[in-house]
Amino acid sequence: MSSEREPKVSQLLYHLFKWSIVSPALHVCFRGKIYDADRVPQKGAVVIVSNHASDFDPLIVANCANRPVAFMAKEELFQVPVLKQAITLYGAYPVKRGASDRQALRSALAALDKGWATGIFLQGTRTVDGKITEPKLGAALIAAKSQVPLLPISIWGTNLILPKGAKLPRLHPVTIRVGELIDPPKSSDRQTLEQLSNFCAQRINALHDLGR
Image (tube, rainbow, N blue to C red):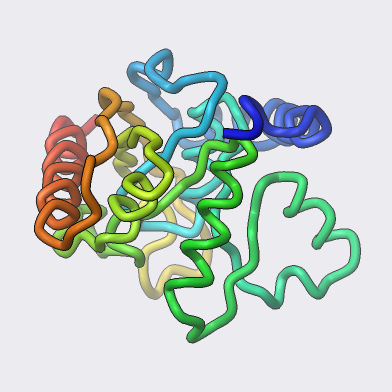
């Protein structure tokens, strides 16, 4: 890897946003509980894999990691002045709607090469109950190509903050559990990637089953 940490300016912006907005909202409004946050490496690249049930999840994952986490974001957001600079410093990288997975793969690998923690939602999209039923192979492939470990994180309760049909957010409790690091696969053949993806899903779902 060419770097062990995110740029200093990104770390500064992250901590300002975390301690002024995200962390107070998580703990005061949603009575957030975080377990085993000390398992998150505080330097060096890592692929963070998580379940996904809410638009709030990227901010919550990054908050609990105690370091910036690079997630993909819609390309349209990078066309807004000021916002473009802010989300880029925060670690987001653009992906076009309908673009091939290769673009996302290249962007994630580039972030890892710069020492970022890179966030991947294992199912690739939100699920109604927060459980992973169809893990995608992207995170395992990225880990294989970069030879960077994976870190499973479970988010419980965010699916009930703004359920379908609700007009205003609900102050539902949220719990985050951090699993143990998983070594990257030695091969990128499909069978190996499927086995690792399923293993990550099992780990995350087991943490999710612990509930509050």
